[in-house]
Image 1: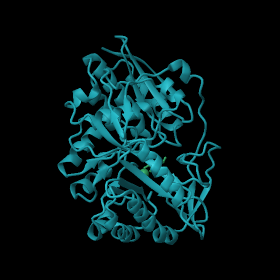
Image 2: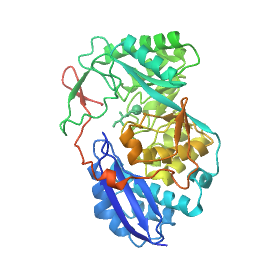
Image 3: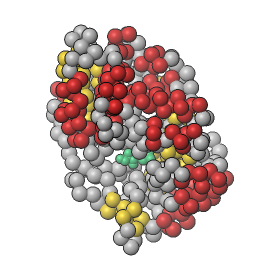
Image 4: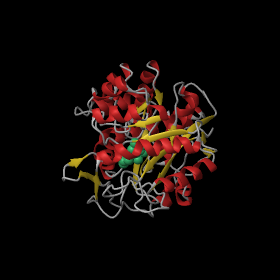
Length: 408
Ligand code: CS2
Ligand code: MG
């Protein structure tokens, strides 16, 4: 069997999805996602200029050897751009493998460990009453878990994933007005004084059953993070996410020493080498990698297996930028993984999105039910995709009040 061609599409309804389609001499094709949020053209160029010319003629069934060829063969290894480009190829080769076997991918991993996979929604509000309304709406939709982000009184600008006016619930992650980022101003003291009270209020209002998650989004120093995790311990969060930048694999020790609040990290990790020591020392509780940014199914499955040896559960990233293709890949891993925890789920389903990526995957009552169709179980409407162009977008950059550049 041989790969005969591969095509890349950049763009989509409201997002710059980077979709890869790999064709074979048996008429079977595979789909992959290389959507690296706010840098979408870079994995597309890496694929077009370096990976696809080598891919043509390879046997698509040899997904492991192809992964090693592109990883070791690159010499300069890792990094989100390369790993997103491999990730798309890897997802597409697994899709082809599933279609050849006439099985949904979870069967090739070892079958189902559960029917519905628990998901969480993004509740947000310009202030606490607004956030309470947002949580109420998600609970009414059947969610058992919500991430809560709240406007901070006195903060000079709206904070991470918080609208600047009441009633807006869009996750304001990417601003498509151009490549020059807006500036968000951050004051740690205002945040650390207000946010524990807001989390306690959500717990008091919605009771002990609700799974409450919060994303600090890398904003605190290790000591501030240890103090914050200790202070919110009685609230019983499901997880406290990215409390401090974790590329320094020492920082989580301090938090672990002072608090039993569950910690989630990893959405910015793009290889097992970013987190193997953190996992082996059991310094956190949920691994947040994404198949798109961490080298596809093959590599993420290795990370999941290592995490499983150390009582760490999965909590795959599923940001607004995620394509239905990568969400489908994660859905199969979520159905299989013995150490599954929870899946971040932004309602991808605008009508255009469903039209562009038709599938039988189902999200209901806060649970994600994986499709039994062969392979990934998602298709791609090429003709429709051609209607969309790349639209440069950016995250804000964050500065402290004295102008210091801080963590977004
Ligand atoms: C966030 C992400 O979903 C999350 O947990 O951390 O949405 C993150 O802000 C974006 O992926 C950045 O592009
Ligand atoms: Mg996050």
